[in-house]
Length: 424
Image (cartoon, rainbow, N blue to C red; front, side, top):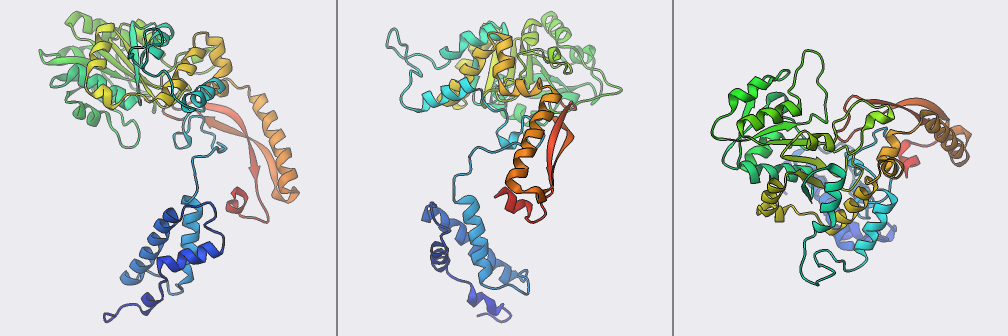
């Protein structure tokens, strides 16, 4: 052993020894041994590194490796994509899977994963068909667009639209709409990846029609509008309405692409919420291409939807990138089932969970919280300190930013157990 090394390095147990101890204690029940070995090896390596660089605490003992391994195996060793309770107050919670699916969408997914499906087979001719045939008609009816199809998420939809319509040419966009769409994916980066050249106009807080007009050159392929669905700008601000932008584009021979993001197919104002632009309004305004998410206000699976003019959608469909970002059969099944709800708006409000949550009566939420509090008192005991309180909820998921929804919550102050023990 080199001079100055921590003598406790000799005490680090082997991976196999730790696995044997975990197995004897029952920690590997239901956990594949190869998977457990991965996390044990990480714990052993981490202990060795801490002892080598002198960051191990003075009270470090070999049993620490066993404890860390047991915790890691308990967390990572079993399937974690399981149903959970969203008690965060955020309705569309990205880290919890965004919008929950309707009963019909869940049943459609179960049917699609149970065996083979007619994904790309024409049932009448027996010839090869297109998976988009399942959704084209629904998109045309629900959005009013001439054509449409779906890919695996809205970032892909935006990337595909830009690549198909503007690669090698210029795209004009307001500086105030160069958003970050989550996970550090920023609109300028997506645009660069598509091969389009970004032309910023206006200022952060104010952009006018003449800003776009002055930026148009023979190299301009698109005027791009981006809905700021995950933040709000207030005060000394101005933006160009989509209809005005389309009017300008028509006068200059430039199509308009609108990244709507949140993807509302119903007017949320009918349920007392602030206005949110709808896909139908964007299509009616004359946008050549509109893109939006399937798992935000639409209340469906992760998907990106492109709707618009037939020739524009056809260019996107035929682009090589369309194959790389195509939607899979399970998401397609869920999206079809979700869109069917929107054939009748009243059915959408009744059946799509996220819409039901948005429209929930605060009194009904309070009644639910009181019922839950009573059940928890019986389960946890009176010493748990269970009470019902008023609370504020948010939409989340990059939709309706700044909107506060009156809600209710159950507050638990456990006297004899930690929050971790209660969660377990």
